[in-house]
Image (tube, rainbow, N blue to C red; front, side, top):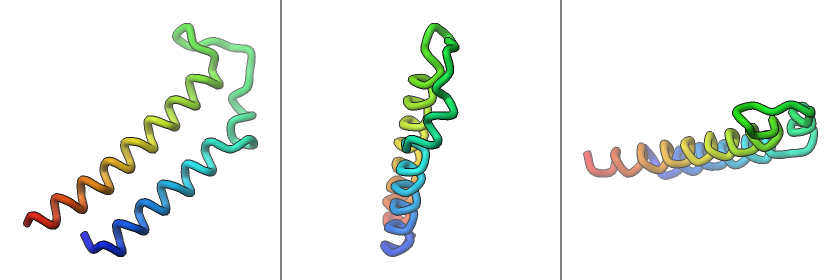
Length: 69
């Protein structure tokens, strides 16, 4: 993967995180309900966070794998 493309992926992940972890989106999940013993808001905050970590790992891993080929 080209260095410029890697930076674009990482910027896209950053802006996705800014969108998903911002007030208007999180207020959708601020309901008095519990899933798996966890409040829904907390569940989605950690789910979005995990998604961002996985996407970042994928972008960095893909770029490192392409360098070694």
